[in-house]
Amino acid sequence: MPGTNWDIFHGGTAIKLLDDTACTDLVQRLLTLSDSWQERHTLNDQIHSFHTLGAATYLDTDETYGPVAAAANPLLRDSFGDLLDHVGNAIAERTGHPTQLSEDLALPGFHIFRGDQRAPPGLMYGGTIHVDRPHDRHKFPFIIEGTLSLTLPIRIPACGAGMFHWTDVPAAMMTGPKAPYTMPPELRDWYDTHKQFIGYTAGAMVLHDGLTVHQLANPGRTQDDEYRISLQGHGVLGDGAWHLFF
Image 1 (cartoon, rainbow, N blue to C red):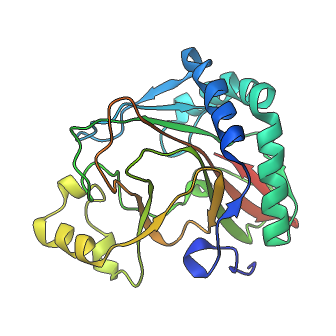
Image 2 (image 1 turned 135 degrees about the vertical axis):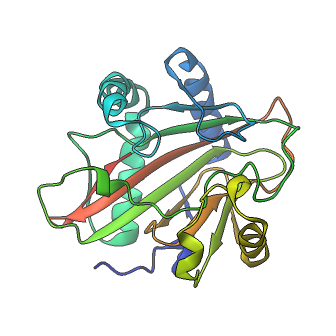
């Protein structure tokens, strides 16, 4: 297994990749491609408008993943190939292993959340509490030696953005519902009182191995004209290199 000194949950730090001008340029590029976004609805309590540009293992079914990836991958390469190269080089420098984009799977893509002042802060409306195991749904021609998840925020609401995370979660806490609104009150209260927060900075990439329990944080009330936008992806380490996908 690779070292974890790059993992934000194990002493790692965010990697500053983009200045404000570069982030604004990427957001404008993305907004011009809104006709190619995929509308997503993942939870019954979802309030925020949520779209992706690109396929995502945890969102798409076996039937939709391939077609969405086939349509979006060329667009991501053509419009954001420079960003994907920059991200890959930064991961290689930080982890000590080269990177390559998966030839067969979806490329890292964008999550686009529209602000919604109706949603209060806290665990509710923040998505599921989970670990990342997208590699379990795919086959790779090598032994997986490590895993990686990446988030590169490029637009953050005024109230902030980040992840809630938990350490030393009792096994019993991971066997029940993963969405806070479906949890028994005592389970939801445990997660609420034990949560820790890592904040995001626009242009600074966060890496972790995906295996720390975490949740997309909803730290404050967003305004309707705001966006929360990030590049998201995963990686598996095999044959000496990270293979990046989403």
